[in-house]
Length: 352
Image (cartoon, rainbow, N blue to C red):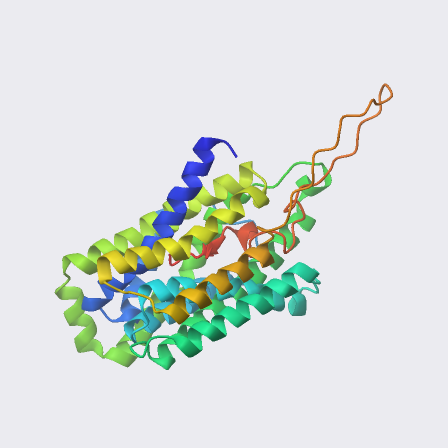
């Protein structure tokens, strides 16, 4: 990619990595479910009046919102409120990559490659090391809830992928060689799928925390949750995904995907600087193994084929196109990048 595009990708990774710390800071003065409701309300308004509806069935849009937004972030915010360290959460959430491969194989019959299966196993081994060797200050329940958030994200990835396949198969442009616009569709899906979140999360907060606690939190807003909500909604969601999907629209996924590997290191570094979270040896070793598995699964470690020497072609004969890693719109891309959810990760990861 050009230097400008690479710098933009690094910027998005930094925004998403810092996002975990920003969420953690905002949770000190607001219940997690109410916090999620406010975040996605700010994502919706006024963007929903400016961004066109995604070219997908309403059922798919609502399902993506249910799993990728409501489920993922509802569980992630809850895990952080239960005591999950922000830096460690940015790492554990990367389990969504391997889970997406497994779920896509079951639901979409997309057979994973040998390297993807190896990556899933390596990533799982890293998760086991992190889970068993985690600090005593990290509750087991918080760790499990974070894994559940990763699983919800993975389900959302598969639904978004299925919606993208239906769109491409049913679009007239697919039959005339005109490429779809993943940048626009990704931002559209981000905004419109947020419709699912505010009302259920507000209702859940009223049920769990009580009307008095919700009313007190809304009438006694401090600077931390306000800044956190604006950061997560505008920077992490709208600006972050807007830039990310533009990059995916202009460059091969194989060139954009590797930058998601920066999110956990940035998240853990930010948590160390701001929250004084210092990972232990097991968390560091397990984290490296997990990221190695993610890199193997997404094809980051795959060797690029050498460019073939130019050959003389007969007049009027067009040389065949040689696909780069990631050209295949399947599991070679970041799970979910077709619908605009590269992390967190796109990969999100998005909470990012």
